Image (cartoon, rainbow, N blue to C red; front, side, top):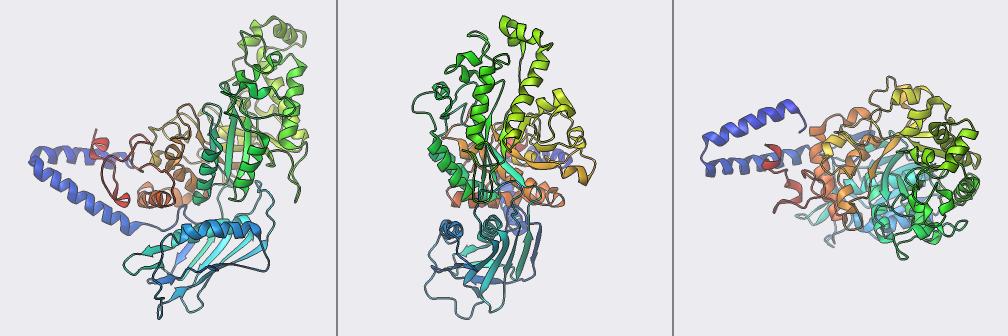
Length: 565
């Protein structure tokens, strides 16, 4: 799959050899080739995913790593935030009990010390610094160090260190190869996310916390929570308490306390949580509790642009989400303290407005077409968010319709190939990019799109300059929930989200070679399994399928039947 010419040649050779050799000898040849490929891949592996910005492993030997109750230390202050992180990572870094005989006479690391300039654990935002320096010595100093400007950079350095440490079962001790190691790392893009969809299938809090746990492993820092849609409205809204009558059932709801606990859980892992209320389309579930904000009982979407009650409800909802002001140091605002609020705006069929006499009359009285009504709606709601000190995020159809007429605070979330991203950034708008339904889609519900296709999706593709590329904030893997619930969420997301994670974290030049990435993503998938993440096999034809047969995690290969078809 990685190179069409090479695969064509392989297919030809495969068929030719199959015709020449007897079946038994042919199968033996395949087994030998598989073993050789596995050994070759193991030699080529790089120890960290996603790749750091700058990495130097000058040594050729290894150092022992000696765990202890105080292995992780912090200089210059105290931090409950980092203490909690150290407690989480201790069993991840040291899952096995090493020999108690010690490592006398062996170069060793006995501590990882953190030096952090700012120990504030305010909610992370777009501009939060995640850079860090990591040094692993090979001399007698025994202390590895992470230096970071913020606690969130310290978290990223902790994750990198955790991936460097391996357990040597023969020696019965932990080791790091290649010391001394120096890593100078920072993300290419500040916004690196996963979208979950709790509207198509309700996701229990345990499933949400479980997926949040996985995001730091790939240095992902945003959970985009697509909260409501046509099918259900599960969130408690205190200003409009009948909205959650649109939930699937009384048991499939989120109280505001539930949401606050999930946001705090995410913050401790360096993850921002951004909520989406898709409007004015995709909003039929709103009508159950408040039918007056929908055009008519038989024509329920888009939301009623002609009724001020619609905008009163939305403004109160926005105020609950934002707190009516931006978050400040030590003062998180609203239910969702992040500076972004996603307003959707996609796939709006305005014909319902023209078919509803009261709405049609309002449009005519105001000299508007249906499309003008759409513009009025999305701009009015976006202005509510801006007036409350936040930035609205809207899907690409909003830009496709209205171009440079949108407020410059608007962030354009591009999911359609027809959206001209160069035009978006040239007009000065920030972009989140994922691109939905194509061969390199970052829509994770497209389970026929393999990891390597996602890896070839370049966020700045088509943008003519590095200066314009700076307006791309990052992107998301989008996990639309029509066929996903708590039973298959993790294995649909992982390990393909790792492709997106590396494209968004690592330098562009470091993510061009799919073949070089293959052994590393296989190794990373095995790490995810060791950490209890239900990551599907890397080479699946359909992403979340089970393994095709017995094999080592490190040697799993796509079956020849899947390649040679």
